[in-house]
Length: 213
Image 1 (cartoon, rainbow, N blue to C red):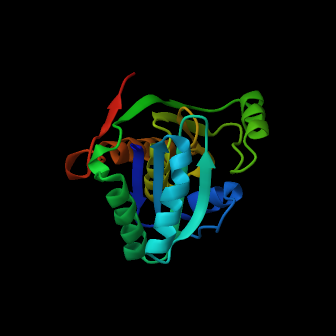
Image 2 (tube, rainbow, N blue to C red):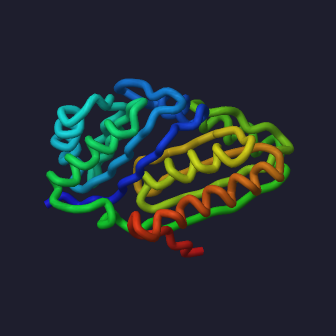
């Protein structure tokens, strides 16, 4: 019995997110404009069978496969959306479920911190080496989701909406974590877009995101 925790389809990876995912990817690197499917399941070892099914179903590339203690995550990508969706359909049929059964998203934390101080910026940059650097005086958006994989969708939609810098987009572990920086107006717009993106997960595509703050 495989538990579907996260099921996120991205129509077109934005440049910063594609580059960030590439810094952590152990498989085939995504490029801007690729379609992407992020899947998280329990138990973690189940991702091996799902990877095999996805790769045999179409021409997708396996960007990452992560087996944690309790959960497992994979993301597949391809320039052609129909290939990604075809592989996704095969995985769902194997699990005998639909993507609407995925876990509902919980927004654990979201906040804008304005005019970051030099000391704060230095510590953030030392801790996050895979994305851009935050500069003193910029505003910072921080966001945390449960399950972790939903943060990828929020990140991509935020980058579409505003001129920001991606500092961190961590989509594995207990929670997904997003850090973006930029001018105050841009960060406010990015925050609106990220929150709206998680809300759009409701409706015909399944459970939405609940703000528990």
